[in-house]
Length: 105
Length: 179
Image (tube, rainbow over all chains, first blue to last red; front, top):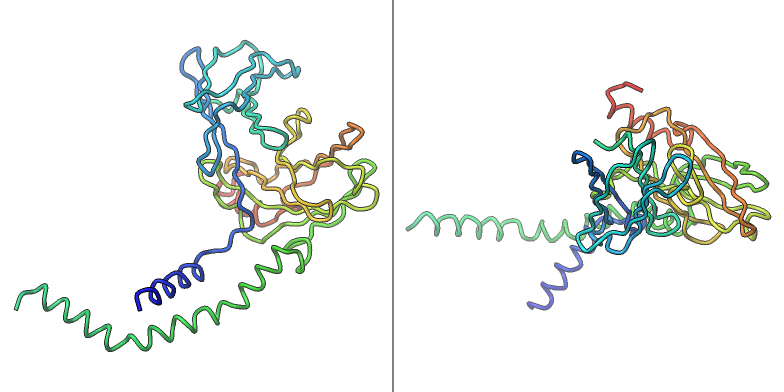
């Protein structure tokens, strides 16, 4: 009887759970200014950390100004370079997040 | 008799009175939702077409693609990654063998490395999740980038309102009507 009830409850949960179009994990990266320093936190929407993911600071002329990599805490800190630049979280082709320096609060 | 005993007996009476009707609901609700389930299944396996709304055929350099909105929902929040809208794409003609990857991005890509979200799936039906931050202008452009096996890169822009009217309306309502 208990097994039957557990089965019925399981079937109910499966029936009521919403269908998702694709189980994907989307990258995110948010940066903040702390005086001279910029602190970027990255990761994935499913909770995966960004450890080992590349984070490059790139000038508008496409020259990599500061190459970086996320550590265990999924955070990268760097000194704000002079001129126009953007931050690129690069977890591989098509898994990128671009943060323009004008969008860093 | 304590209040707790009274509560328990009231709950027990309710259960005895209505348990038949509740068990009937457990059968009837899934039956009522079955057409919705099969519609969703048809959308996911492609038998309902490329997506819920076909945007149409686009020329991107020498190649041609068909683009569609996967569903007609506004961008869905994906945790800390923010609102994301699903698009589907089918390569046509020579593109099937000549195109290595397709990417989608709000705004003009600065480089192939920063070309945006990649489409994944077979050449005939690929899906990509396009992040649409709330601060995006409803008049923004969606840029489609195709990368060829020969290393070439082709781009094509289309207005967001054309790619996804529901996403443009959603942004308009978020921005309080301001562009």
